[in-house]
Image (cartoon, rainbow, N blue to C red):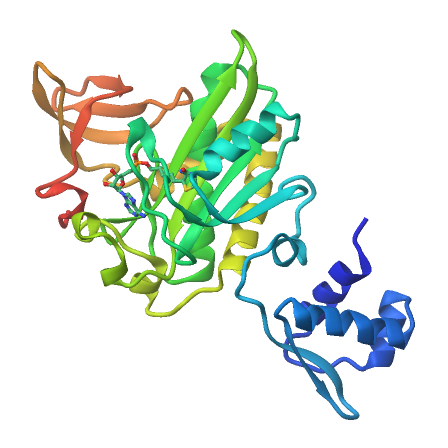
Length: 333
Ligand code: BTX
């Protein structure tokens, strides 16, 4: 059940450009005008700026930029994702907390979000730079009723969600570099880390970690990654409201995930391939023993990258080094 507050936020949000009188709000919410006024005061305390114009009514003029459980949940249009939200100012890694919550029995869709991570994790024990308030650092606890072999599909799905969310709010053209980097203009803007706990034929839970660079300028990214990392701000030239972005991602995630559960992997595969980095192009692939040229064709249901050699032989890759171009994925195609 939505609280009166949540409904109030929704009504104010959907009337951003006009005023709503106390009477109208009290009618719509079915509470007294005094109750409306009290709720407005509470919203003010949480950082919402509400303009109260005589004879016109109320209007939201600014949203809180501070992330809290409340600001994330208000107006969040999901049914399962984000029902439980844990917000921290500073953590070592949101992944570790999400694992702990899974063990304590928290359910599908639980979100752990932090303003800052001091030990943000990438894949294979790499570090993920997660500075205070400059990006989105969160973990999502998922309990899909799927066999472990399908876990890579969740990572691919998450990449699609990020690419779709970014495309829906900007003119930017995000791309997905297999398996799961989100690039804009050849630079990494987001990363995904999937950690799974499973029995032989059933996933117990997945902790899906998502890191997105949002409001960093060039100088606030560490020097060693500046040439290959970027942020929404750097690419779009404006600063972004973190609360709103997290809500958008959670909503996009829920819709995409529900479609995946109902219709299977095909819609995800099609979307992934729409955003796939260097798909249709020739790259160099190498293992310890050899190097060869191949064209990137698409992805497979088991998470593999499908390639085609010059001789027309199709091959599935699970791990190999891909040379994305001179100078790495930073280079122009
Ligand atoms: P990855 O292994 O693909 O990427 C890690 C590599 O990316 C690093 O070695 C570095 O070169 C580069 N890198 C580090 N920080 C950044 C950054 N902020 N922007 C761009 N490039 C960077 C990707 O791993 C998975 C990242 C998941 C992060 C989320 S945040 C919430 C959750 N908690 C947590 O500890 N990890 C996940």
